[in-house]
Image (cartoon, rainbow, N blue to C red; front, side, top):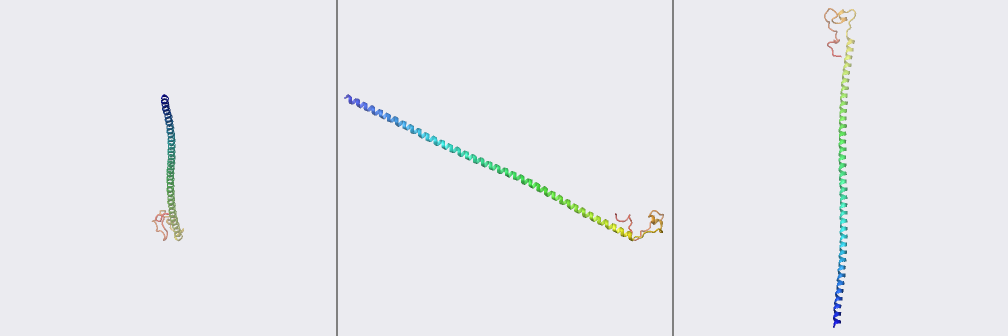
Length: 174
């Protein structure tokens, strides 16, 4: 009886050892599977994090590029506004200079016209004087001494001037 019992106990011990080994192997396999799953999960998380960072970097670059483009656009608008303002100032100055030059030319024309009118008047007066002198009676040597010397030279009163002769004191200014 004993050998059977011993065999039975040995069989149970072997069975338990086998079960223990199997359980140990199963637990090691489960641990390895868990490690593998964790590694895969970590790799996925790293890939997701890397993709997220790349996306953020791309967005940041795009945003920076957009900001740079907007800044350049604003600078271009400011420069264009400055150029337009300078052009308007130069145009206004040119118009003012043209207006002043036009006014000066008008003044010169008016002055020239006035001088021409005065010159024509002087020439007309000179011609009238010459005509008056041509037709005026001239005193001869035999005339009264007060007439030859002019008024105030003689003792007598002033004689009336001959017809057509204009007196220097009452005549138009020369």
